[in-house]
View 1 (cartoon, chains in turn orange, blue):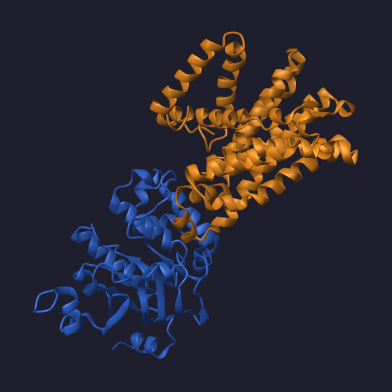
View 2 (cartoon, chains in turn orange, blue; view 1 turned 135 degrees about the vertical axis):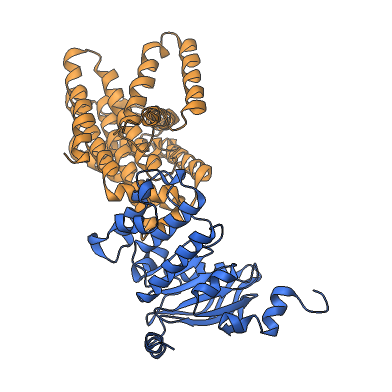
Length: 306
Length: 249
């Protein structure tokens, strides 16, 4: 069996099936929806950081842009949800294109510049003078298109697409070329790889993922403020989840979300002080002993983790 | 002169470098460099530290654009083209300090170069290449686990996987033991017999003597001697540059 197919059957199918079926067994759909959102965002971070090496500290910028692209298409252009999702994705892609010059930076400089760019978009969207267009700081209300079941299903579909993309990257020559660029851009050039093209494609794919899931988020919650969707928490959580599990793998970010977001929802709200203690200890322990994430533990034992 | 050499001499040079200039701020690392390279020829590039040898390779391989002069390869101007374009035209190099893709396996390192830079199509024999550089037993290990000599061989494998017609070799011999030196020298000569033009930068004069047909001596970004190594060591200017003058210096 080809490795990609095995990975799809072992990881993609069970995760998507669980996400699709759990709402019938468990009544808190909002919680499940948030899991789906973070599973998708963590994989989006995986595409750009895991495979290409750029840490997107302002990843929430694409998420918020997708949410606003969707909402403004519904409000001003009276689009139905599905075309509006395409509008949100397009908005995130355009922002990604606008920010491609940032790819000239590397390491912390890229992370800071990306964070600044995301904050700039947030400031523009929440500017009271743009109230007629973006509703400014007063937020969005989309009661007309509210449809929790349909939007939940769409989110699961986008998560499945994202997982499919990561399975492809993990098993394809294109994914290998991205990893080569991450390891050494100069050697990658001398291996005949078009470094700029590879980076831009990975960057736009990760922007597209965040834009799509951001649009679905707006559709699902249907009432939100700029600070909700541009919250740095989305960037930080997605990055921490991906790193915790292990980047450049398919299972790593999934494990990270299930474990860390699971702990967050179990005790993060009821007893935040213990939550912060456990979170802190887990992350410190991981950075010290498993800097390549949980899955590197299995690799150490000689198990090939998808 | 062998028949093969005579044919090569009659042919057009594969690479023609004329008045090449590369500046870093006010410093002229290459200051009007001229030389040519025939298909199947091994040209040594020697000179003291800082004389522009590695810069010359960096410009030829597209790491930096030239600031002046012309670089004509196979009849076309290539100055300023990006590395991956040059690789597709048949130019490749090794690095003084090898930069393999550390988390990828040895096989993947070569595979990615054969796939993206390969001029031989999908038929390229990766296993054979690894075996010829004694890397076959390491094929499944991450490149990070190789020792420095193996990393140099992997860097050479990465370059060879793209099927180059012009190969620049930057201090490949440094750190190799005598047996490894002999093998690498044989390997480079075999490439040249197959028609590949080689530009070899090296400090080990024994190695240069063993592999090159001709040498260029560089000083301060300019060639000061062109000919065979045996004559270079008798050249007054070359001796001065390497050893200083009798008056001290």
